[in-house]
Image 1 (tube, rainbow, N blue to C red):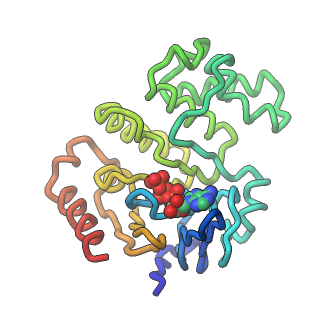
Image 2: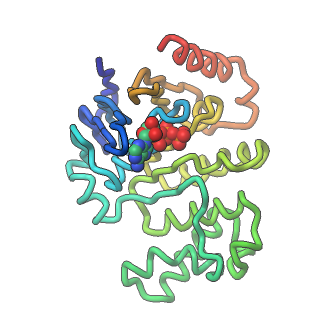
Image 3: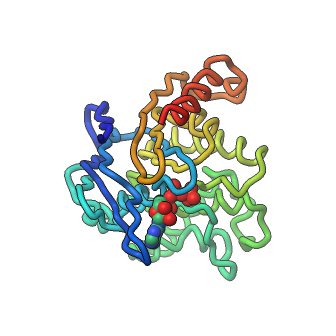
Length: 261
Ligand SMILES: Nc1ncnc2c1ncn2[C@@H]1O[C@H](COP(=O)(O)OP(=O)(O)OP(=O)(O)O)[C@@H](O)[C@H]1O
C-alpha cells in the first residue's frame, strides 16, 4: 500500500504514484508507488538505507530517468519541461569539477550554455563564490582545495543558473564529521538567501533532522515511502540545537520508524 504525503498547499513538485523498475540481468523494483508533494521553498530530505531508491527518486524528479509508472509535475510542467527551462541545480556526492579550469571558471560553466555575456558570467560567479565563502579561491584550481571547499564550489555552480529547485545527492557523505556539520550550517545559510526548494538525499538521520522541514523515510526492496516526518525545530537552526532534547527525540522517532517497517 502506498503512503501519500500530500501536506503542502501549493506543490512545486508533485510525484503521483511513481514506480521505477530497472530491467538489468534481473528486474529490480527500485521505487514502488510513491506519491509526494513538495511545496515551493521547502527543504525536504529523502532518507533511508542503501538501495531504498533515494537516488532513483532524485533522478526521476530531475528528468534524468523516466518512471515506469506515474507522473512527475513541476509547477504544472513535466519534469522534462522543467529541466529544459533550467529549473534544476544538481549537486552530486562527488563534486565533479574540471581540474584544468580555475574555481571561478567551474562556477561559470553552466552559464556559458545560456549565452550570458562573459563579464556578466564572471560577476555572477564572483557573487556566488562570496555566498559560499570562497572569494579568495576564485583563481585557484579545484585540486588546490579541500573536499569540503570543492563541494562548496559545486554548490555555487549548481546555483549559478538560479535554479528554482536544488537537488542534492548525499553531497557531504564523503566528508569528515566536522566538515559535514559546518557545511550543513553553511547550506542552510545559503538556502535562506536563495530560497530554492531543496531535495536532499542522505542516509544520516541527524543530518536530515538538522536540515529539513520534512523528512521522507524510505524503506528498501522495493523502495517505498514509509513515513513523512515534520521537523518543527525553529529556524535558523543552530549548532546548539544538535544537543537539544527535541533534536534527539526526533532522531529517535525516525529511527523507530525504520524498525516498524
Ligand atoms: N541502473 C540501474 N540498473 C539496475 N538496477 C539499478 C540501477 N540503479 C539502481 N538500481 C537498483 O535500484 C535500487 C535502488 O537504487 P538507488 O541507487 O536509487 O538507491 P539509494 O537509496 O540511492 O542507494 P545508496 O544510498 O546506496 O546510493 C537498488 O536495488 C539498486 O541496485
